[in-house]
Each structure stands twice: as structure tokens, then as C-alpha cells.
Length: 291
Figure 1 (tube, helix red, strand yellow):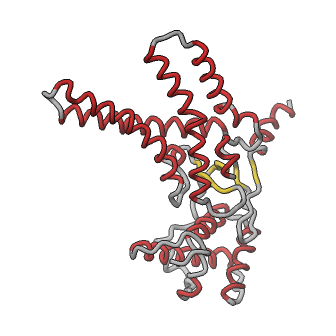
Figure 2 (tube, rainbow, N blue to C red; figure 1 turned 180 degrees about the horizontal axis):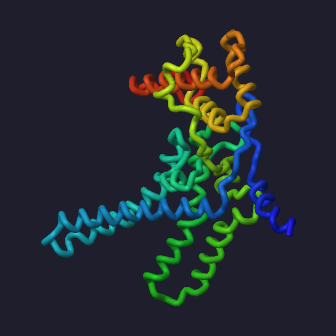
Figure 3 (cartoon, rainbow, N blue to C red; figure 1 turned 30 degrees about the vertical axis):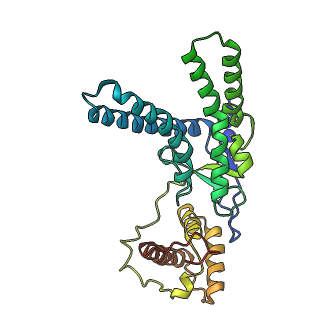
């Protein structure tokens, strides 16, 4: 009885991983399960097909009365359109600040670099380029053989075996990695859903806020802002202490004994500065890149 009651906890704990940030803080991320990742991928596919169907309906309305003249346009929409979507949808969204496609956001997932560094464009391209080989290539072969209608049982079984090996690969490694994740050095992890202790726009009059100079806010970029947000959301006292101590040391500021509010004030000020920079066409990805 006791063993059965504890088994779900052991299963969940196997998805916990150490994720040490450049500031030396271990955020203890939780990997996305195979089911969550499959659900996110399915949602993205549904959205992509919805876009193609909408484009087809618009085309049909525009070509009403032209008959077969619209057929080449429909072919372009579904062949070229789906090729563009499946190759750029995942890459462009994961290169964004949240590191997640719409499907991953709905499932509470995002992509991170396993070494704790900022997720690079090369890693995103690599992990998504492999998806063409893992999934879309064998299914394209199945679609082609279906259209031909010939006796191609060998090709069908080969395509199913090929796609099956890659589709079920995350079930047979402890980090739930696709082949693309293995080559790119990435994880798909759960997003911490805890709200910050109070809203950025609301916390103004209850206490004296700490103010920072432009030089102090130039220390970090978007990647460090995201990391700081994760630290605040998790509200781990030891992690908060380490990060606050690191920032105070770099800024030569005294310790006022209120690490959380110090970090919250720095987070709010850094967020406002980076947003202002983006409005002026200046974007800073991390602390190593100047605006």
C-alpha cells in the first residue's frame, strides 16, 4: 500500500533536473512529459492546418467563378504553404523571448539550453531541422504512396518504422529528449505558473522602492531578466539570497536585509529599461551583447 502511494511521486521526481544559471543559482526545472510535448505539437499542427484552411477559403472566395483556374493556387497553398509553416513556425516562435510555440505555451512548456546559457538561434534551428527528418519526411512518403495507389507496402512499413523510432524516442531516455534536442543541447521544461507576490504596476506606495542608475541596469539583458523572473516566481530563499548578493556585489550596494524586494525592484527597473530600448529599436539579448 505504501509503495503504491509513493510511486507517482517518484515518477514525477525523475523529471526534476538541475539548471544552474550563470549567477550560480540552481532553478531545479521540471521536464515536460512525453504526453505534454505531444499535446503541444498537436496543438501547433491544428493551428497550422487552420491557417491553411483559412487561406484556402479566402482563395475560393476570390476565385469564385473562375472554376479550375483556382486549382494551382490551392496546390501552392497546401504544398508550399505547409512547407513554409512547418519549417519556420517552430523556429521563429522558439527564438522569441518565451522560447515557446503557441502549443507549448498552452501546455505550459518552453525550450531552454541544457547548459544554463541563453537559448541560441543555432540550437533552435538544429532542434527543429531534425523534425523534418523525424516526422514530416516519413509522413510525406506515406502521403505520396497513398496518392499513387500502387502496391508499396514495403515503403509504408519502412516509413512507419522510421517515424515510430523517432516518435517514441523520448519515452526511452530519462530526459525525454527528441533527436533534435540531443543534437541541439536543449530541454523542454515546464513553466513555473506561480504568480509574483504582487503585480509590477501595483506595487508603488506600500514601501520605498529602490532606484537604480542606468549603469546598474546595463549589466543585464533579456535572458538575465527571464532568469530573474524565474527566481522570483519560485520564491526559493536560498536562490534569492545568492542572486541578490551577486547583484549587490556588482553594484557595490549595501545589504539592507530585504533580498526579495531588492530583486523585485531591480527586476521591475530592468524590465522597464529593456522595454523602452525595444521601443527605440534597441534590443539586448543578454549581458554579453550591447544594445
